[in-house]
Length: 318
Ligand code: PEP
Ligand code: MG
Image 1 (cartoon, rainbow, N blue to C red):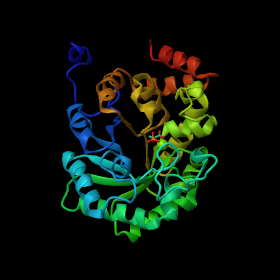
Image 2: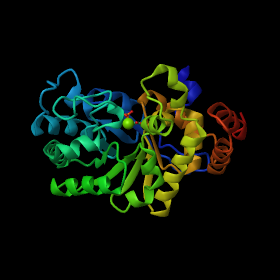
Image 3: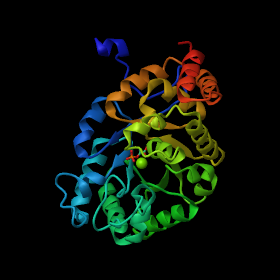
Image 4: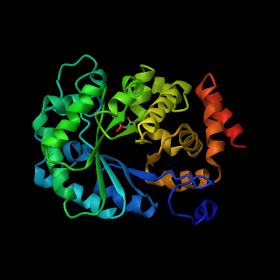
């Protein structure tokens, strides 16, 4: 009956008046592909590649070979012959440390040499991953895009784009917006790379200075926080001004009401765990883009997460 309640509709994500918002899946490896296809994902908006480096099969003392990586990436690309597949390069550090990449003695690992920072300090690991992605894309019809995590400014975005070129990768390169400085200077980032993807989990952590792993601070992980919505709006507006895409791939995208608000803020695609896709698709289809925009304004005018959600729900008619 759950299916009946959601309608049998699969099809692309869109508002009631036909404004398209592609619904993509977050995956952590080839094992998640079947569920994504089953949920009708239009592609992959976030392929977390850490499993290859840190997962069960990984040795943890050295990176997987280019051949091993190529095989895993090819498997995912082959599952989405008509779709976009956005692969995030290795995001090691903080909660996912790697002995050969991250310094062992950092006082604040979440604020340390993690994500792209660690890859730029070990460029051979980054270049091998990009080469493997290039090889995996050969002969595939999926549309590959690559993005870097934990980018704080345009200089890092440029270094990532340069590494992509050096590895001979023809895929589009983008960056995640996970640090407030990236949202504030989103237009400058887009002079260096071609698209943005908001990682709202880390963006909340760094906006509210609240460790995402500390349960006592979980209310700051609530993506309805109006300050977080402001940063989403800044990024989406910058992307629109530059004629580029700006998706969301953090937990925020999996809340059906918040998904409408994100569309209203100008976000161009939503990526989430496969299980959430039917719910987000059904809710989005109930509202026009203008209604989503009104809900977004109402949420941003609120003072806290709870009232932002209530205001958006009211604006959407309950
Ligand atoms: C995020 O930070 O929102 C994100 C999508 O990346 P991760 O959760 O893997 O850090
Ligand atoms: Mg993140």
